[in-house]
Amino acid sequence: MTSLPPTQDMQFPPKQHRRSKRNYWLIPLTFVVGIGLGIGGTSLVYYTTDSKDESASPQSAFDSPDALGEEADTEDSPEVEPDYSPVASDFEVELIVKEQECFGSAGCNVNLRVEPSYVGTEVPSGQWEITYEVTGIEDEPQIQTFTLDGSEFSYQPEIDVQTVSRSSEPSAEVTDVYEGY
Image (cartoon, rainbow, N blue to C red; front, top):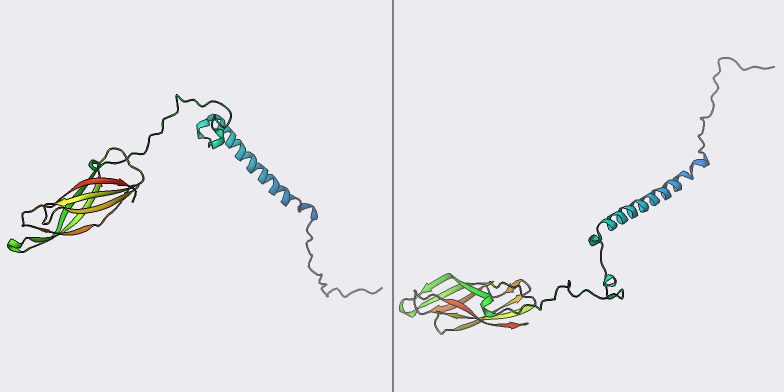
């Protein structure tokens, strides 16, 4: 029998780890269980919240009594107010002297800043054209307009006029309100 010399070291190849195939089924199972718990938890929260507070649930056109074949309760239904149509007294126009150049007895050239405002108590909707007259100027009155669309004014921010003297004070008065423009 032959034997190996005792001083010689034998080297073995490193061990390779083999993965067990039995653990692969845990990944899809965990995924499915997670989705199921998410859906179940969401449904539980939705149904417990919905049963406690019915006013918090969204309503569609199909939830109305008419859609379900039931009679609508007309006593509790608020009446729909028609849209408010503003009148001239609902608006004011302030004129502020921005620049003034006077020429003795020939009068003054005045640059005015125009600041329209809504002072009415009811909120108008839609589009409106508002006409105003500038008085206290030479060759008066000067007719100007601005528009109101929803809650936004659109207007010429400055106008140039001539006054008869340095002491003249231009003013504006709203005269007409027209729907649409």
